[in-house]
Image (cartoon, rainbow, N blue to C red; front, side):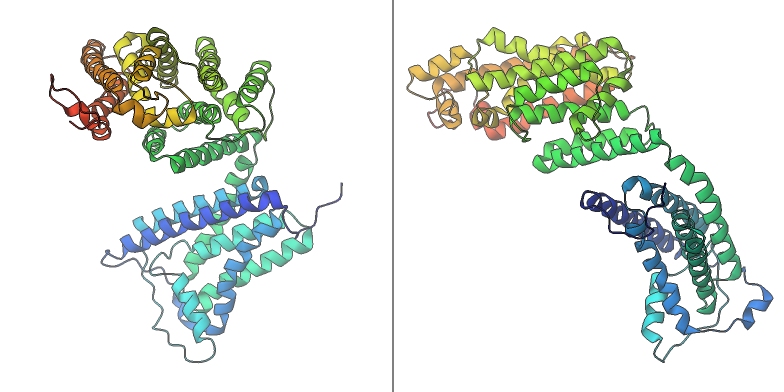
Length: 500
């Protein structure tokens, strides 16, 4: 097989991802490298690593241009390593070197022995750029040298002997420039080169493993989906932050929770009309279920990829069956929208109970908890109440009627339109129902508190308490702010406008 060209323009579909990886690493580097420089600024001093003969190394400011060329060397990655899979080993290696370097800067701060430098000729501007890039402190190892050598190693593997020699000479020149403009001592340079060699040998083979690349791709999909959810509505940001908070102490074990959250929320968004798909969302969901049950894979299908990973990570046949059943239960809401269905109160509550029994059960499975959803039935009903009240206005706008058919009939008898949110909440029948639901929720939350107290000692109960407190806050503060008549004292008749 012929070797692909060393330099080429990346494909349009690869540019966004490779550029995002490069930008993400740049931000990571600035935070870690800059943070280490800021912290060591409070140190009283550092160790001396200069060698006696180094005082004879001349100061040649013209070499600042070579020093700055390291940025050009790294930017070439977009035209040499043109896909995210090819770029991944380099980005991970540079990230590891940044972390190792920052630890060394903090543990072993170095004090340079070079005399003060003054540049007044044509090299002054380039030297200022080079000196600014280096910040203060952060000497041993030289990450400038480490990055240049790592880039040379990565690019050299993509070309023939001429490419390897050319990039090696470029890296060697950059290493020499750190001495000739008196930014580093020889020990810093050697340590940087050694760091690059060792890191590349360890990280590159690991980053090229197909299972590692697929796992990182799924993590990137999860991060992108969580960003999209949070951008659409801020209420999705806290769950996303909580998921990543727990990931800090167990990245692999909590991956099931991240993939599950993103998969189910994506499906919900499609069914709600918040995520556009080709054709009818019901057909899209049916096709997704068929592909999941058949074991088919398609790397380009985000929902299928997340769903397959979620099912695989659950490692429990009962939980996998619950995932598919939950999607089918969620599917009914779309059918209700299409048919403009009005369900009786008993049927509506049963539907909400089934939805949240499956949701909470999967959440506990994902957390590998001992507690089970049916251990707290009142909390499940409180979930259903909270969901219906929280999204009442939005659901009515979308055509999802989470109001009992009996209430709708009573509102129409007053001459109102139960599908119109202001008409519903301003009607006597609507406010009577909302007050009754508010009282029912209070009773459910009181019962749920006792249920959770009885479960103390089981793993997973803390998670249930978190949701119980969140629903309590919605009941006590957020919902009354939306519907002030819920603050009215008992026995006071509501006014037509809904004021207390």
